[in-house]
Length: 322
Image 1 (cartoon, one colour):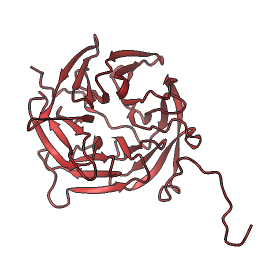
Image 2 (image 1 turned 60 degrees about the horizontal axis):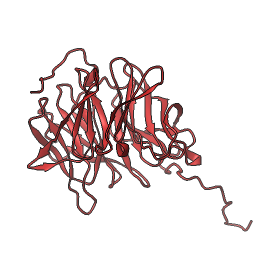
Image 3 (image 1 turned 180 degrees about the horizontal axis):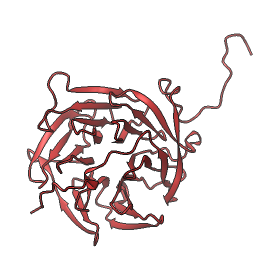
Image 4 (image 1 turned 90 degrees about the horizontal axis):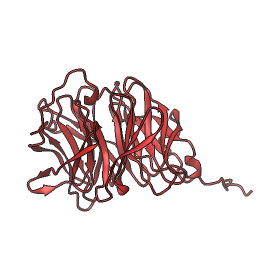
């Protein structure tokens, strides 16, 4: 080998970015295969009060219920409805954001679906993800727009779903949304800009703090970009990176502190790390991922317990739907 030449090494399909390569690594191991097909995209994990894990398949219009005994039942099936992120209401209903514009609400006692069609100023949404705050207000991401034409945004729906307020607009395909433990910070993953945005909210819970209330806390490397995210009780953000088989964990200031890596990612398997959910009262994280190797749920141990969501609060602040 001539002086100055680098020894060639086998190329990995998704190497860790240099800024993350020295951080602690948390392994994520296979937990349950939902479907062996590489064409099933898995999304939208959420736990109910009984410990069942629900998940979605956007392009196939499927909502799965995965029991504690690891049996997958299909509770919704409509290929015309692109189901995506999901979250449980305090009263047990499952709310599902749909890229085709519907807010799908499933009564999990009988799997009966109801549809709402939120819009703002007469414009419908292409909803990707959603999160409830502690009072039952629902934040949804409108997954539209590009870097050249940022038409997307994040909006807040009232508990009765009758009023829609903009939180942040002019975004390029906003994806994952999560709230901090105190509910004063909103995290937004902006997919096509590869950005993770931190929004500090005023006391009304919907207005960004002036001047420095909206910051780009983190930029991801490579394509595709950031997908959905979740928060633990210490305020750490677990940000899925779609197409790279990994999660980057950011602290409450948006600084990377650890990696979660899917087993088999170096061989190109299960790279579509789209979303995650924490099993209530534990630090166990469950990741929806798919691609070569099939559609899987992977499991890992987080840095702290997952944040107690609106679905598992002791007291209901719900306003009944009319």
